[in-house]
Length: 303
Image 1 (cartoon, rainbow, N blue to C red):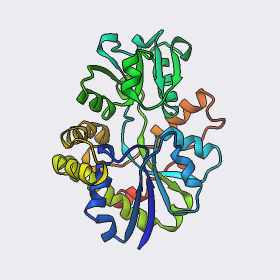
Image 2 (spheres, rainbow, N blue to C red; image 1 turned 120 degrees about the horizontal axis):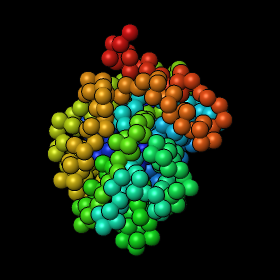
Image 3 (spheres, helix red, strand yellow; image 1 turned 180 degrees about the vertical axis):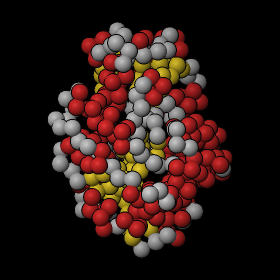
Image 4 (cartoon, rainbow, N blue to C red; image 1 turned 45 degrees about the vertical axis):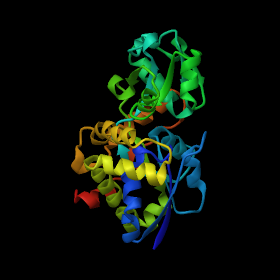
């Protein structure tokens, strides 16, 4: 039995439905994998967790992985859950913010992992960071929006807006991927050491994970009940089921359900160019330094 730890980059809700249902059904265990799922905690940079000597996998944003590799960490992406980032910005409908251009002159609350996405998206519409007041904020979205201190707040478009709408908020949402920011999200990343020494176990982990996702998209109501009863007590099953379906287009992207998890080197090249442009990394890293499709290619019998 191989023991792996998986560090999530958010709470164990619908955005990890495929992993959670596979864990619940003991599919990992049946494949010889003892998987410990570790929930996110505030202000955690998941990439830092890969500095331990433990057999660690993480879910993270592509920009955090790139910055970790640029700083010398021997890490790579082995698959991606989302083909498009769930990054976006939400505002009260009364603010009448509906487009990227509407953010000009506004105060936008962000988290560190979303700063690059906002800057890149602004630039594509003729705006710069000087046109918007960008402030790093916490995660009490309801309070931040109620006070009116911020005109818009960073969010995961399939998650927080739906949660807040269930609380009675009337929101506008601007998804980053619809405005030109096409990067991978919830990237599954690990150390070069694990890739080299545990290839078969990692292959089994990935195969089961994406089988779990196909099951989740097909049996959303059942999976939502499991999430609430086993992993996220106090949440609402109806809302979790709705979130699973909202996530589906982000996972399918242009590759479809049969090739979930697949990555294209050119997309990584573009993400590197974004970070270099804003001075967040000094060197241009080639895609092969950041990702490998070798495990997924074996699963999908791609030559």
